[in-house]
Length: 106
Image (cartoon, rainbow, N blue to C red):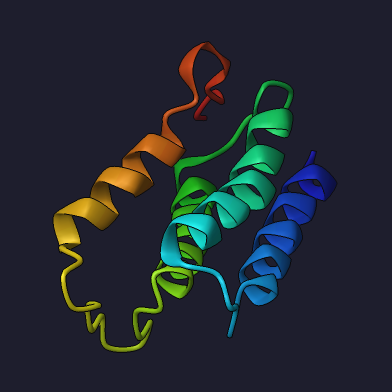
């Protein structure tokens, strides 16, 4: 099961790297990151039990990826003009909502 988790972490980081310096607008970049990173998690979440600390690590990676999509400086949380923190949180929550396929937390 650890190999599946490592695969999710690796694909999440690669998804983030794939949108760094992208020419897309933030909505397209968020959709691209979400399809790659969140999609991998959803696929494996059904068969892989996750501990809370592992989900926290994944949450950090997702936040970095969505901030990259929004072109927010990840190190100091500087927001894009016109984009509120609440909007970013809403997108993160929507991406984390996995419905009936949510993982079991040990």
